[in-house]
Image 1 (cartoon, one colour):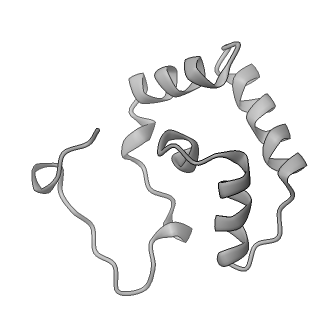
Image 2 (tube, helix red, strand yellow; image 1 turned 30 degrees about the vertical axis):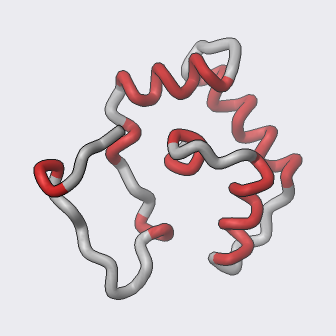
Length: 81
């Protein structure tokens, strides 16, 4: 969800997971998106993004995406778009 909320395409998501040594296909990403749309009761990616932001999911960074040596910024230290 984090990558989708940050404008990553399905292809970009696959590349990102491969950089993290995780093998995932574009078909698997597409299927996850389909399931998320069902769970969030939305019809398209744009509605999914709006609903996820409304529920505060845009502020959650998956631990796997935080590289060693990274640090957490507080809300007042940067603007969330």
